[in-house]
Length: 136
Length: 228
View 1 (cartoon, helix red, strand yellow):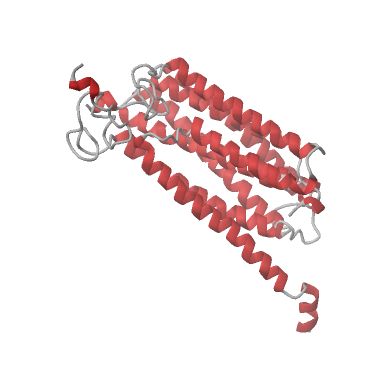
View 2 (spheres, one colour):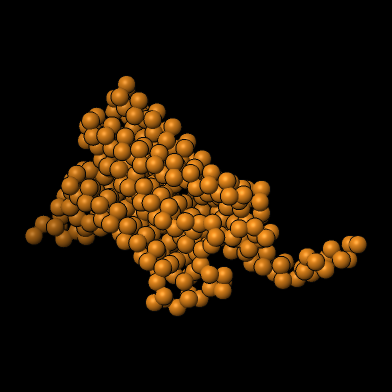
C-alpha cells in the first residue's frame, strides 16, 4: 500500500490531489505538472512586473501606492503557495493549511501589533531634544 | 437499475475516502486504509512547521524594520541608497531558480539523474547570482558609509535582508549536498524526503523575498510624503 501511495517531492504524478475532481479522467501527467509550474511562474512574473510598474507609474493615486504594493505582494505569495509549495484542499494537506493559518495569525499580530504600539509610543513621547534639555 | 448505481457517489471529503480506493468502503475511521499517514506527508508537515516558525522570525525583523524605518539619524535614507534595477535582477534570479527547483522535483519524480542534476545546477547558479548581487550591494553600502552601525534604519535593514541572504547561502550548501547524494546514492526514499524538505525551503525563501522586494525596496523608496 505504501508504495502505491508514496509519491515524490513536489510531484503529483499519478495522484489525484483535488477532492471532487473525477479521479480517473483527470489523472496527473508530467505535461500537466510542467504546465502547472509554468502557469505559476507566469503569474508570479506578471505580479512582480506589476509591482515594479506600479512603483514607477503616476497613474495610481499616490497615497494608495504602498497599499497597492502590499496587495500585489500578498497575491504573489498566494500564487507561490499554491503553484510551488502545493498547498491545496487535499485531505492530506489539511494539517498544513491549519498550520499556515496559525502562522499567518502570529505574523499579523507581530507586524501590525508592533506598528500599532510603536506608533502610539512615538506619539506620546516628548521630542528627543526636549528630553535632552530636561536631563541637563 | 441496480442498487449500486443508485447509491450516492462517495464523499471525497470524508477522511480516508481517497486512500480506500474508488469502490472499496473505508475500513476504519480516519485514514481509510488504516495506520498512520505516509511518511512523505509526515515529513512534509514537520518541515512545514519549521518553515512557519522561520517565517515568524522574519516577521519580527520586518516589524523592527517598519518601526525603525524613519530613524535614519541624519544618515542616508532608503530613497538615496536603494537601486531598484539591482533589486529587479535579484528578483528575476530568485524567481527563475524557484522554477528550476520545481523542475528538479518533477525530474526526481521521473527518476531522471541527468535532468535532476541539470535542474539543480541551474537552481544553484541562479541562487549564486542572487547572493553575489546582494553581497555587492552590501559592500557598496558599507563603502559609502552606510554600514549597519550608521543608523537604526540601516541596522534593521542589514538584519532583515542579511538574514534572508544567510538563508539562501545555507540553501546553496544544502543544494550541493542534495546533488551529491542523488549522484552517489540514487533516488532512495530517504534522499527523496530530504529533497522534498529542500524544495519546500527554497520555495519558502522566494516567498520571503517577495515580501522584501515589495515592502523594503519598492515601498521603502517611495517619496516620504506618500508613505503612510
